[in-house]
Length: 265
Image 1 (cartoon, rainbow, N blue to C red):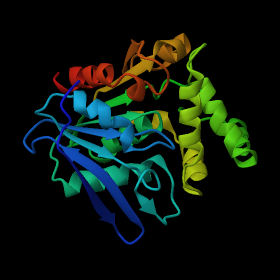
Image 2: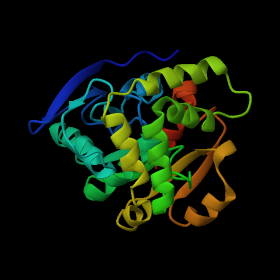
Image 3: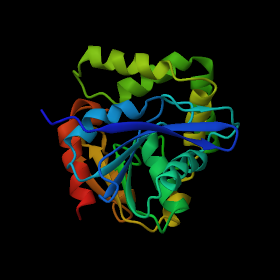
Image 4: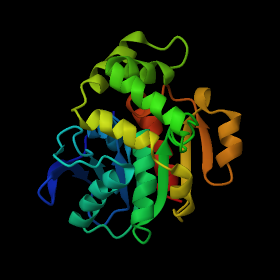
């Protein structure tokens, strides 16, 4: 087992409507890695991952607004606004250069952080994100309406569908239930509004304006050839076999090795 890092829990205030909590560990002069959780999750998903990273890394794990400990009364729940949550932490920590990695929805946020801070973000990493063609690229008006309607009509069923869709055949039912229970309890209205923000996000437009290299670590079971053909020339897609869509929780050591491989390039 790795030695647990010395972690500090801090907060940064964004105007009068948003307080962002984050965890920082590692030496201030070390290479900086920023970790962004997925929708309806929290920065605790990266606790074990952080412990497996090289000791000289400076790691910032962030709770997006209304996730985990962070709180907000704002009305805007777009990927761009979540990126400003992350940017506020980087400013508070005086980060000059960082690799920004995000899981699921956090991958979309990481892209937006790269677009927002082109001089500070050296590499964008997406953990099982960006390659789901029914969720990330801009959808038609009809598709978007159907997704939003599903969550508005029966939020729990929508969450259950996401968990099931991100679980390989025969996957541990207890783990699936634990993910469901955590995600269905996301604070509202932010939970619903942020999933709406994701399905309205124009990923192709964001990618055109994101100049950093992007690496996607995609679960092999869910990565379609169509997605690889569509985006293989825009970002580096690496297929992994570390578990379900939530593999950072299930395989923290393997995830840490993936992140370190990108950070040390």
